[in-house]
Amino acid sequence: MTVVEDIPTDPSTSTRLIIYPLVLVATVLWILYRWQTQSKLYKLGNKLPGPSTVPLFGNALLALGKKPDELVTLALDYVEKYGTVVRGWLGSQLVVFLCDADDAEVILNSQEHIDKASEYRFFKPWLGEGLLISSGEKWRSHRKMIAPTFHINILKSFISVFNQNSKNVVDKMKSETGKVFDVHDYMSGVTVDILLETAMGITKETQDESGFDYAMAVMKMCDIIHQRHYKFWMRFDAIFKFTKFFEKQKQLLNIIHGLTNKVIKNKKDKYIENKAKGIIPPTLEEITQNKVTSDSGLANAKTLGDTVFKGYRDDLDDNDDNDVGEKKRLAFLDLMIESAQNGTNDITDFEIKEEVDTIMFEGHDTTAAGSSFVLCLLGVHQKIQERVYNELYEIFGDSDRPATFEDTLQMKYLERVIFESLRMYPPVPIIARKLKRDVKIATNNYLLPAGATVVIGTYKIHRNPKYYKKPDVFDPDNFLPENTQNRHYYSYIPFSAGPRSCVGRKYAILKLKILLSTILRNYKMVSDITEDQYRLQADIILKRTDGFRVQIEPRQRVPFIG
Ligand code: HEM
Image 1 (spheres, helix red, strand yellow):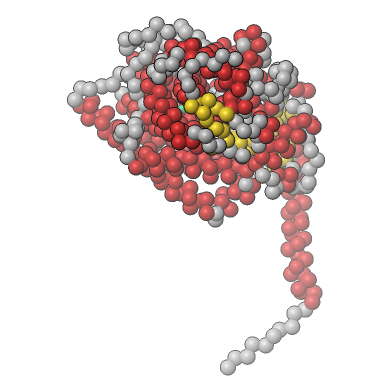
Image 2: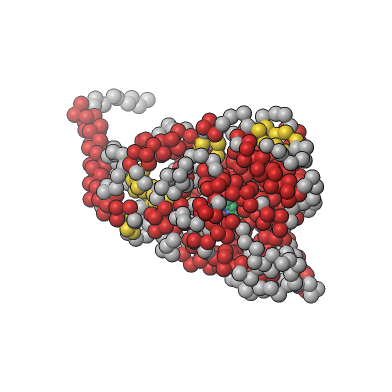
């Protein structure tokens, strides 16, 4: 038997075993700190106003343990304290918040500062290199390909889909009469149904279980991404991989990508089969260049949106100069497959999948939050709701008929209500970019260094008293023509602006008008709480942590006489 004797340890050896690694770690940290403080990023960054920092951590500890709604309050307090330019350090990452329209214009109007911040990487497993996250040549060529699929002629062909689904949600909401409920659940469901049909061509009739599973998976994926934004530790891939959310994400992406791939394959096979039979759908060019006959004389009809957003006329406006009227309905996916097959665009099936997934994400949570805010706000502001209802009564009387495109042009007050709601509660409350080179902004001629993350504070810009007399008061008259005409264009950017503006802007406004008008013709919204009790959540999408609580009362279909 071998006897293992205890070898007595020299006390100086054990001290060395502890001290040496500690000295090594301290030296590495010191070198890191020296390197950080000597960098140009650090020197320029620290010329900007902001809270004091802790070595190595910067300001990261300020966010530790904060709930999503507390983070909103914290960020707003700092802007209040330091002004419209505030810097923060997340370790060695410089983040600069800009809350003035002049500064926002410098960044958003640029063709150069179009790269998204690293936070957008959480979307990558889902959206790949789709329009929202891609950059450089890929983004440029895909934007050129996708913007025309949002042509007004195509949007008009979606009106019956918007109407049918709006009617469906009115029927579903009936069971909530008299109760306090979260209207966001309904807005989210109807939005996914509409997107399934307009983006992928999947209708209620043609969808099987996989359509429902897909809708649920999209909603749950949005939730996981939200959690990764506000739970600090989940931001690190190495930690995220060991959480239950990672496994859940894998399952959800299997459902989402499984359906997108299946639909793309079926549509492509069908296209090839039809082509062999000589059945070829109209091309995107034919639909958008007046080659298909028109049934509408509304070519030059302009809405308030055309005035409000004209200051940063973008590629969406260029498209619509050839507006001719309602056409045969083709989902975005059909248009992309068609243009890839006929050789107009060089896009692979995989890239088509990325773009369809991107549209499903971007079009979903944004409009669900936007419509939920409008309904809650009308529950609070009864006088404004009465005006909306009277306008709708003037258009529709007591008829149950669906809305036409022409009707939506008459919904001028509802449009102002939607715009005002997007001002006070912009569904995308911040926009983040990574700077590739130094840039001088308007405020104090500050120089922002290359490598910094710039966060445009849409929410705060929209509430700047420089642009809005009573910024915290819900007043749709902020969008009367006399009030919009002299305002800084970049003081209202719910859809961002410039080259990376939202391609879905016109789609969203048209859909919101039809959805909201249908609900408001059928129900009166009532709220048991006031606006100052809303608890807002810091997220990629602005929401209420207290839920979008409302009550509904059936309408008697008579005008309101106040
Ligand atoms: C009220 C509704 C909506 C709001 C407030 C909104 C807002 C925005 C904003 C602020 C951006 C820029 C994001 C950034 O730069 O980080 C954006 C981009 C985008 N949106 Fe929307 N959006 C809405 C609805 C939609 C809809 C309905 C669709 C599609 C059906 C859509 C598709 C997109 C796409 C594809 C992009 C990326 C564009 C690019 O980078 O070139 N959005 N949206």
